[in-house]
Length: 316
Ligand code: KG4
Picture (cartoon, helix red, strand yellow):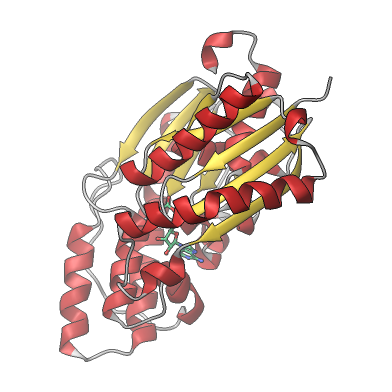
């Protein structure tokens, strides 16, 4: 029998539904509430939850149509159960549970951050000898490095004590009056030749912290001494150096590690992709750009990988 997995992602501001059949992505439909949120310069949780209510049904039917399957063909339902905005998560959970009841299935709970880690495999072949690997997840809500030894052995090594990288880029983008989301806009106006000397980086084994950088940059913006592009490029350079330095530190701690997977919305950044690829003695893997941001394909994919590769039912 075919394994047909429906993925549901509603953790933040994207309503996304995907279908994977025997490991292959058939469809991934995403509606983003960027337009609703952009007039506020950031995500308004209540508006995002209402957006999910409005679009989840439509996304589901579009996805079924594009995948050319019938509802009764679905063999598994996987949905994001944490972390995320409470109201947004709730819509996905209700949808998954109702559908599961109708189809007599047991919904599979997927952790959004772990799905980001494995998003590279949506369109790349997975093999068990990829383990153990290091991962760096950088998104609007999270920034962490972890050692991944198997699907259920994931050890967080470093995690931000304050802001996430995407959050910093979005807030600086808003202060610079760049189009929302700021991270994407900063990527577009980056110019390597322009750089302001910012403060020194903390030691490589210190915890991630970006709130100080954000405050410093917001003060620089008020001074009106530098162009938007100079400020944006300096911030991005500072962050990339920090991420690279910390990754190098953990690589030296785990010499058997040969692979790094970068994930999360900020992993779409072109400078970051270029500069992290120069890390020595490891291969750096990035998800295909369309799968860097939140999407349901990664939710369905993680469920699919676990079903295919884990003998123990406890991992689901
Ligand atoms: O993973 P994601 O879609 O949502 C969560 O936060 O979970 O990440 C969104 C973040 C936003 O902060 C956005 O500005 C950032 O990803 N982002 C980028 C780029 N595209 C999206 N940051 C830097 N460069 C980009 N090209």
